[in-house]
Image (cartoon, rainbow, N blue to C red; front, side, top):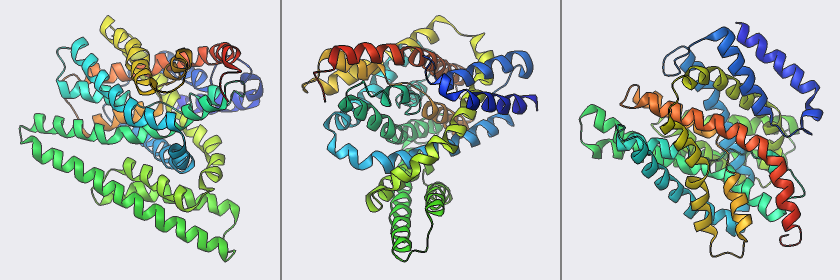
Length: 400
């Protein structure tokens, strides 16, 4: 396939000039989504993301990428979250309010869409993307407190969004099958509980085995990292086999591993910066191909919701959750704006399509999610450097 050849040529070119690209006010995701859009327009043509084989390919790659991101992020920032009051507020207070506002806005803007589809839209677009926020997180001029808050929030809110999504999917299954809602809600809670139990068991047991292997000097640093990646995938596949959510299992498994093996997250950083980045860029390249035909059918409602999702729906809950802290308003606005949508939103949307197959408003749903992610990639990518400089200049002496 010409698309595969182009993708790896892009990987080579971007790798060769990566240091120079880092100095530009653009992100690597912007480059790959733009390349995907060009290939989609010139070569691939119309692609229906809800039907095989393309749906299977993109979902599999995105699914693996999110599982590894959930696991590695949770193992790295899980303990930090307990010590960071700001990120705790954003996760416990801000995330649920974001989902509620997203559902209300989708219900009002898309009146022909069932309310549970509005729920899926609001939930899928609630988590933020750590990879898209790296320009801000790695900018040493931005106060450490703010950078840590953004990093922790984006590392954990994707896992926190999954239970809400499962509940809305369960309601959708009940509506489509004309069966009692209680049955599907029960199934959703079973997925949550089984996923959490599998993640806890695999994370704790796997972490203990790695520590014992360290003590005996049986394991090398390279294979220690491989063992952690194996644990991440084991949590996902075991949970799936027993009827649990693989994403919740990966998230809880990462938290459990990070609790047992204190440096697990640091070891997995190498993965996130290499193999993880390759998977991430693959997903955005594929998104570029998929999103081209969707752009032809964009209407004002989709644009309105996308803009609201990145602004009011995101920034108001952030402000409400942080209002009793000593943060200045420009700090709240800065944290609120840098909540880019990316990999998690894509995967949660594809998960809903996979579980529900066909449902009322599915075309609107996928368009809203993908267009919002597209807008976010460029809006946050272009503003990350200039707004970080402006913010750090005005707050250099106010935060540490």
